[in-house]
Image (tube, rainbow, N blue to C red; front, side, top):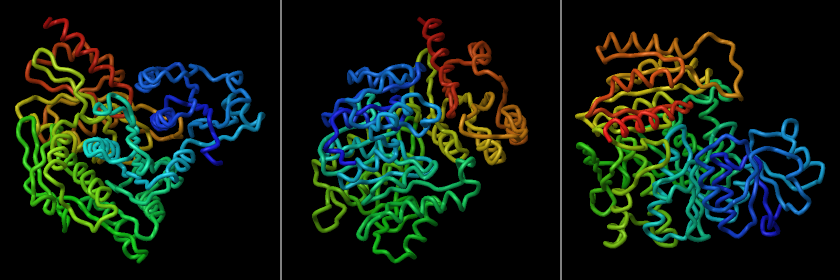
Amino acid sequence: MVIDEVRTVYFIGIKGTGVCPLAELMHHAGYKVNGSDTHEEFYTDAILKKLNIHFHEKFDSKHITKDIDLVIYSAAYSADSNPELTRVHELGIPALKYTDALGLWSQQFDSTGICGVHGKTTTTAMCGVLIKALAIPAQVLVGSAVVDFDEMSTISLGDKYFIAETCEYRKHFMSFHPRRIILTSVESDHQDYFPDYESIRDAFVEYCRLLPPGGQLFYCIDDPGANEVAQIIQNDKRNIELIPYGFTASGDYRIVSYNVGDGEASFSLAGVNAGAEFKLGIPGRHEALNAAAAIALTLALINDDKQNNCSLNAGQMQSVKNALANFKSTKRRSEIIGETGGIIFMDDYGHHPTAIKTTLEGIKKFYSNRRLIVSFMSHTYTRTSSLLEEFSGCFNDADIVIFHKIYASARESYGGTVNGYTLFEKSAAIRSAAQKGDTYYFEEYDDAFEPLCKMLKSGDLFMTLGAGNNWPLGRKLLKYFEGYHG
């Protein structure tokens, strides 16, 4: 497949968090783009409509016509179950799975893949705001809408570099062609595909081995899994430059003087502009790690054709400082959806125990004078069952926690006994023993609405948390309190 010969592209599953950003980039590059998906509304509906990209809200073989040059389809669909893909094969139209299409796109550029069990989305978005601030000729693809990208998932500022969030699930990132990789974290996850830690670690090792001689691996040395992967790559002796970042890193990207106050965090990097201070308006030490990775990559691109150094001129430095200080993050990553009556309403996608623990810890320090109330819906029975002990103990920074049923995945097969109430019971026991506050269970998230209307008060921070479908609860409560205080 030579992508330069393609003009008309049809996307099956165009609302997907990966598929939609690629459709964005191809639209901006001048391709004629359209597609199809289900009628269910996602945040990507707004993106597609804003770009005037037409899409059908059902799958129908009649949508597939001979004038289509290329079909790109979500990995969620196959010719066995999707009538449009069946028709594609009947007509002999070239078709690529999304991950393969992303890989083909990455071949055109000096590409960086950003990966990790958690942290990759925000890190990629931070790279985007720095790329934009410094006018580096790059395209950036994030698997989420980014507030700082005008609620889009991509930015396109040139055709020299490509920076993309890449996914480990089912080794989807193996289609990518990286010259550089940022590795944020490695630990057990996606238990329906990776049965143990070693299997997911080996997938990241395999991905990092795609780096060519002279390639660069930026890795979070504070994360045991990422550090282990880096050491395996180092032992390969393949002329890959390893660049650590983090609180325990040696070298230029060691985080020093990290401080947090009420509503603001600051940090500096040992070798960047003599330890100049950077400020962040989003909570958590993990966000300083994400920012360090983004700064490290940005400096590598700036100095790509020069002798390596870690200095920015005064104008560049101020641009980087401003970009990070004003960074608002992505959809569903510590996203403030509103504030009324003295209550902050927040939404976060955190669905792994480590991400949940670091997120809640960071929020509690960032908003030290606020009571933190969390509604959590776990995602997939296999993950919840495999990490039940870790899940049960990761909510202690919240003052009140409300659990719901598990949000199941169509891709998993589970025959065990763990459910949402199991998680509630174990977590409630841990929180009670540690005197950490009240814990409740409501099977459906909407059942918690009326109790929360009575519970919430001025000075609280209410958060919907998880990769489930409980996120509308925060918006419904926000609307209620806006009316109550209006």
